Amino acid sequence: QVLKVSPATGSFAVFAAPPVIPEFGFVSLLGIGFLPGCFGGGGGPCRLVTTDFANGIRRYKLDGKPVGGVDATNISAPFNNFIGSLSIPGNGFYYSCGFLTAAGNQGFILRYQATSGQARPAPGLAPPLLTAPTSMLNRSVGILAL
Image 1 (cartoon, rainbow, N blue to C red):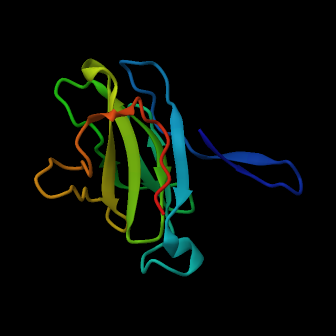
Image 2: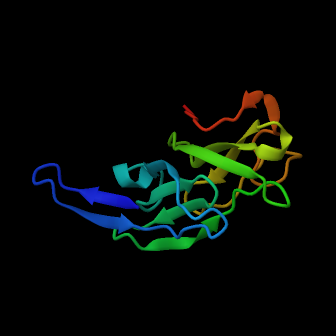
């Protein structure tokens, strides 16, 4: 769950509750961030974005309601990859990283258009890959895009 907390009072409420993945029995939110529209930049609306280890990227309005569908993060069939954190540098995109469990945990980087969540792959790669899986990124779960 994503919680909304008041530092002044310590009170909290559930802001968003992504669904549990039946195959795994849990939710593992590894990334969370606000799109640039929340801070007067980026040219888009204010949205909270989350990554779930095995269940895609989700965008939320500030009232906790989901926006659009789930931004797909599965790059293999059958499913054998997981994703990590999230980075939102303010350049019109957001990024996540992940790894392929069936390929020796080779890592990769994913890219999405910030206002729509549409995958923006690098030329010649399948959506949403910005980089092809590589052993240079071993079991990657953290990313910082500047």
